[in-house]
Picture 1 (cartoon, rainbow, N blue to C red):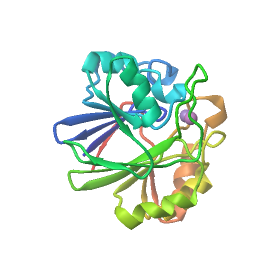
Picture 2 (spheres, rainbow, N blue to C red):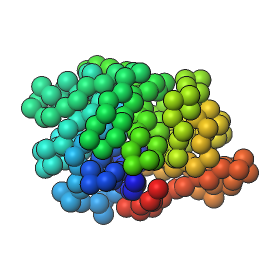
Picture 3 (cartoon, helix red, strand yellow):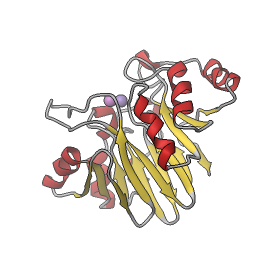
Picture 4 (cartoon, rainbow, N blue to C red):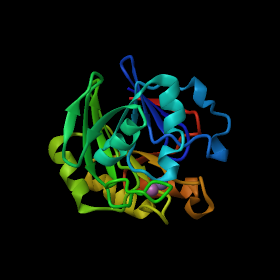
Length: 225
Ligand code: NI
Ligand code: MN
Protein backbone atom coordinates (compact mmCIF):
# COMPACT_ATOMS: atom_id res chain seq x y z
CA UNK A 1 0.00 0.00 0.00
CA UNK A 2 1.30 3.44 -0.97
CA UNK A 3 -0.10 6.66 0.49
CA UNK A 4 0.56 10.06 -1.12
CA UNK A 5 -0.25 13.34 0.63
CA UNK A 6 -1.73 15.98 -1.69
CA UNK A 7 -2.18 18.68 0.94
CA UNK A 8 -4.83 19.42 3.59
CA UNK A 9 -6.73 16.10 3.97
CA UNK A 10 -6.28 14.89 0.40
CA UNK A 11 -4.66 11.48 0.01
CA UNK A 12 -3.89 9.18 -2.87
CA UNK A 13 -3.84 5.52 -1.85
CA UNK A 14 -2.58 2.73 -4.09
CA UNK A 15 -3.66 -0.78 -3.19
CA UNK A 16 -2.45 -3.28 -5.75
CA UNK A 17 -3.36 -1.78 -9.12
CA UNK A 18 -6.26 0.26 -7.74
CA UNK A 19 -6.08 3.98 -7.01
CA UNK A 20 -8.14 5.63 -4.29
CA UNK A 21 -8.35 9.36 -3.78
CA UNK A 22 -9.60 10.73 -0.47
CA UNK A 23 -11.22 14.16 0.08
CA UNK A 24 -9.83 15.94 -3.00
CA UNK A 25 -9.16 19.61 -2.24
CA UNK A 26 -6.24 20.62 -4.44
CA UNK A 27 -7.12 23.43 -6.86
CA UNK A 28 -8.60 25.37 -3.93
CA UNK A 29 -5.39 24.99 -1.91
CA UNK A 30 -2.65 27.50 -2.78
CA UNK A 31 -0.11 25.29 -1.04
CA UNK A 32 -0.87 22.43 -3.49
CA UNK A 33 -0.64 24.56 -6.66
CA UNK A 34 2.17 22.30 -8.01
CA UNK A 35 -0.21 19.31 -8.13
CA UNK A 36 -1.97 18.94 -11.50
CA UNK A 37 -5.29 17.21 -10.86
CA UNK A 38 -5.56 16.08 -14.48
CA UNK A 39 -2.64 13.69 -13.82
CA UNK A 40 -4.26 12.03 -10.78
CA UNK A 41 -5.50 8.47 -11.12
CA UNK A 42 -8.65 7.41 -9.30
CA UNK A 43 -10.73 4.25 -9.47
CA UNK A 44 -12.53 5.39 -6.32
CA UNK A 45 -12.99 8.75 -4.61
CA UNK A 46 -13.71 8.46 -0.89
CA UNK A 47 -15.37 11.44 0.79
CA UNK A 48 -15.56 11.82 4.58
CA UNK A 49 -18.02 14.75 4.60
CA UNK A 50 -19.45 17.48 2.38
CA UNK A 51 -17.42 20.53 3.44
CA UNK A 52 -15.75 22.44 0.60
CA UNK A 53 -12.23 21.57 1.77
CA UNK A 54 -13.01 17.87 1.20
CA UNK A 55 -15.06 17.87 -2.03
CA UNK A 56 -13.72 20.82 -4.06
CA UNK A 57 -12.18 18.72 -6.88
CA UNK A 58 -14.48 15.68 -6.73
CA UNK A 59 -16.44 16.47 -9.90
CA UNK A 60 -13.44 17.47 -12.03
CA UNK A 61 -11.50 14.34 -11.05
CA UNK A 62 -14.52 12.02 -11.32
CA UNK A 63 -15.17 13.37 -14.85
CA UNK A 64 -11.54 12.68 -15.84
CA UNK A 65 -11.32 9.25 -14.29
CA UNK A 66 -14.89 7.89 -14.15
CA UNK A 67 -14.11 7.01 -10.50
CA UNK A 68 -16.76 5.53 -8.21
CA UNK A 69 -17.64 8.02 -5.46
CA UNK A 70 -17.81 6.32 -2.05
CA UNK A 71 -19.36 8.23 0.82
CA UNK A 72 -22.31 8.43 3.17
CA UNK A 73 -25.79 7.96 1.68
CA UNK A 74 -26.47 11.67 1.16
CA UNK A 75 -23.15 12.62 -0.43
CA UNK A 76 -22.98 9.53 -2.67
CA UNK A 77 -26.59 10.12 -3.79
CA UNK A 78 -25.84 13.81 -4.46
CA UNK A 79 -23.16 12.81 -6.98
CA UNK A 80 -25.27 9.92 -8.28
CA UNK A 81 -28.02 12.38 -9.24
CA UNK A 82 -25.43 14.34 -11.22
CA UNK A 83 -24.59 11.23 -13.24
CA UNK A 84 -21.45 10.09 -11.45
CA UNK A 85 -20.80 6.50 -10.40
CA UNK A 86 -21.37 6.11 -6.70
CA UNK A 87 -21.44 3.69 -3.78
CA UNK A 88 -23.49 4.60 -0.69
CA UNK A 89 -22.45 3.68 2.84
CA UNK A 90 -23.47 4.64 6.33
CA UNK A 91 -22.07 4.35 9.83
CA UNK A 92 -21.18 0.85 10.93
CA UNK A 93 -21.49 -0.59 7.44
CA UNK A 94 -18.66 -2.09 5.45
CA UNK A 95 -18.21 -3.29 1.88
CA UNK A 96 -15.74 -5.56 0.17
CA UNK A 97 -14.44 -3.65 -2.87
CA UNK A 98 -12.04 -5.09 -5.47
CA UNK A 99 -9.10 -3.48 -3.61
CA UNK A 100 -10.11 -4.40 -0.04
CA UNK A 101 -12.68 -3.77 2.65
CA UNK A 102 -13.95 -0.34 3.65
CA UNK A 103 -15.87 0.39 6.84
CA UNK A 104 -17.58 3.74 7.41
CA UNK A 105 -17.08 4.86 11.01
CA UNK A 106 -18.18 7.74 13.16
CA UNK A 107 -16.73 11.25 13.21
CA UNK A 108 -17.84 14.12 15.42
CA UNK A 109 -18.11 17.12 13.09
CA UNK A 110 -20.70 18.52 10.63
CA UNK A 111 -21.28 17.90 6.93
CA UNK A 112 -23.22 20.54 4.96
CA UNK A 113 -22.45 21.16 1.28
CA UNK A 114 -21.05 24.61 0.40
CA UNK A 115 -24.57 25.79 -0.60
CA UNK A 116 -25.93 24.75 2.80
CA UNK A 117 -27.73 21.58 1.67
CA UNK A 118 -27.63 18.53 3.90
CA UNK A 119 -24.56 16.35 3.52
CA UNK A 120 -25.58 13.60 5.93
CA UNK A 121 -23.42 12.79 8.94
CA UNK A 122 -19.63 13.03 8.71
CA UNK A 123 -17.53 9.91 8.96
CA UNK A 124 -14.19 8.25 8.64
CA UNK A 125 -12.99 5.12 6.86
CA UNK A 126 -11.20 2.00 7.99
CA UNK A 127 -9.56 0.45 4.93
CA UNK A 128 -8.18 -3.09 4.91
CA UNK A 129 -6.19 -3.99 1.81
CA UNK A 130 -3.01 -5.84 0.84
CA UNK A 131 -2.56 -7.00 4.45
CA UNK A 132 -2.35 -3.39 5.65
CA UNK A 133 -5.02 -1.59 7.60
CA UNK A 134 -5.46 2.16 7.85
CA UNK A 135 -7.89 4.50 9.57
CA UNK A 136 -8.81 7.78 7.95
CA UNK A 137 -10.50 9.75 10.73
CA UNK A 138 -11.84 12.59 8.57
CA UNK A 139 -12.54 15.86 10.34
CA UNK A 140 -13.39 14.90 13.89
CA UNK A 141 -13.14 15.68 17.54
CA UNK A 142 -11.61 13.14 19.86
CA UNK A 143 -14.41 10.67 20.51
CA UNK A 144 -14.83 7.51 22.58
CA UNK A 145 -16.16 5.76 19.45
CA UNK A 146 -12.54 5.52 18.27
CA UNK A 147 -12.09 2.80 20.90
CA UNK A 148 -14.34 0.53 18.83
CA UNK A 149 -11.90 0.45 15.90
CA UNK A 150 -9.19 -1.81 17.41
CA UNK A 151 -11.96 -4.25 18.40
CA UNK A 152 -12.36 -5.16 14.73
CA UNK A 153 -9.14 -4.03 13.02
CA UNK A 154 -5.44 -3.95 13.97
CA UNK A 155 -4.26 -0.73 12.37
CA UNK A 156 -0.90 -0.10 10.69
CA UNK A 157 -1.40 3.66 10.30
CA UNK A 158 -3.91 6.14 11.71
CA UNK A 159 -4.51 9.26 9.60
CA UNK A 160 -5.65 11.93 12.03
CA UNK A 161 -6.49 15.64 11.80
CA UNK A 162 -4.21 17.65 14.08
CA UNK A 163 -4.78 21.32 13.20
CA UNK A 164 -7.24 22.30 15.96
CA UNK A 165 -10.02 24.91 15.51
CA UNK A 166 -12.18 22.64 13.29
CA UNK A 167 -10.91 19.27 14.55
CA UNK A 168 -8.80 17.70 17.28
CA UNK A 169 -5.53 19.30 18.24
CA UNK A 170 -2.21 17.52 18.74
CA UNK A 171 -2.76 16.55 22.39
CA UNK A 172 -6.13 15.03 21.52
CA UNK A 173 -4.75 13.27 18.44
CA UNK A 174 -2.20 11.60 20.73
CA UNK A 175 -5.08 10.31 22.87
CA UNK A 176 -6.93 9.28 19.68
CA UNK A 177 -3.91 7.21 18.63
CA UNK A 178 -4.14 5.44 22.00
CA UNK A 179 -7.89 4.88 21.49
CA UNK A 180 -7.30 3.27 18.06
CA UNK A 181 -4.21 1.42 19.36
CA UNK A 182 -1.81 2.67 16.68
CA UNK A 183 1.59 4.35 17.20
CA UNK A 184 2.15 5.33 13.57
CA UNK A 185 0.24 8.49 12.71
CA UNK A 186 -0.02 10.51 9.52
CA UNK A 187 -1.10 14.04 10.33
CA UNK A 188 -3.57 15.90 8.10
CA UNK A 189 -5.78 19.03 8.22
CA UNK A 190 -3.07 21.47 9.33
CA UNK A 191 -1.32 24.57 7.89
CA UNK A 192 -3.77 25.08 5.00
CA UNK A 193 -5.44 28.09 6.61
CA UNK A 194 -4.25 30.49 9.27
CA UNK A 195 -6.49 28.96 11.93
CA UNK A 196 -4.89 25.52 11.67
CA UNK A 197 -1.17 26.30 11.50
CA UNK A 198 1.02 24.08 13.66
CA UNK A 199 4.66 23.93 14.76
CA UNK A 200 5.90 20.78 13.00
CA UNK A 201 8.92 20.08 15.20
CA UNK A 202 6.94 20.54 18.37
CA UNK A 203 4.12 18.30 17.11
CA UNK A 204 6.54 15.52 16.15
CA UNK A 205 8.28 15.84 19.54
CA UNK A 206 4.98 15.66 21.43
CA UNK A 207 4.11 12.37 19.72
CA UNK A 208 7.69 11.09 20.12
CA UNK A 209 7.55 11.75 23.88
CA UNK A 210 4.58 9.35 24.04
CA UNK A 211 6.43 6.69 22.03
CA UNK A 212 4.60 7.53 18.80
CA UNK A 213 5.73 8.36 15.28
CA UNK A 214 3.99 11.39 13.71
CA UNK A 215 4.60 11.69 9.97
CA UNK A 216 4.11 15.10 8.36
CA UNK A 217 4.61 14.70 4.60
CA UNK A 218 5.46 17.39 2.09
CA UNK A 219 2.67 17.94 -0.47
CA UNK A 220 3.27 15.30 -3.17
CA UNK A 221 5.34 13.07 -0.86
CA UNK A 222 4.51 9.35 -0.40
CA UNK A 223 5.00 6.59 2.11
CA UNK A 224 4.95 2.82 1.47
CA UNK A 225 3.45 0.47 4.01
NI1 NI B 1 -15.00 19.78 7.76
MN1 MN C 1 -12.11 20.20 6.84
